[in-house]
Image 1 (tube, rainbow, N blue to C red):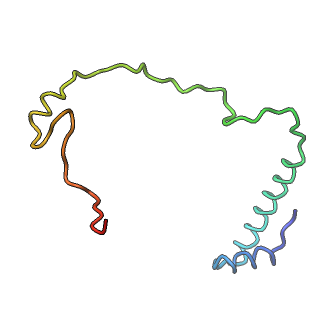
Image 2: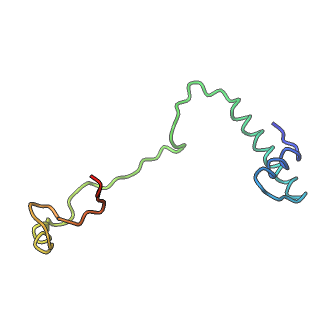
Image 3: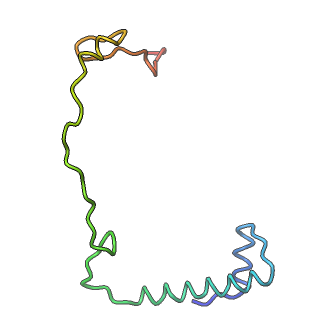
Length: 99
């Protein structure tokens, strides 16, 4: 698909962009080239090509899931102002006064 400067000028006007003649010519050429490339890509036969999330065959290394700190919940429960049965009592962040 080939764009004209009139097409790009109308698009720029709709987007509230002000383009001088040099910018208009450059953007018209760039957008036309991009649309031609997209037309070429859509005309390629991709039957039998498996879709992929990334073009590189890479894997994300994950760390081993292991406990790295000592269990200190008893100490932290003692330090808390209001705690009981492994729970910390805190003020309500959201209240429904109409209920």
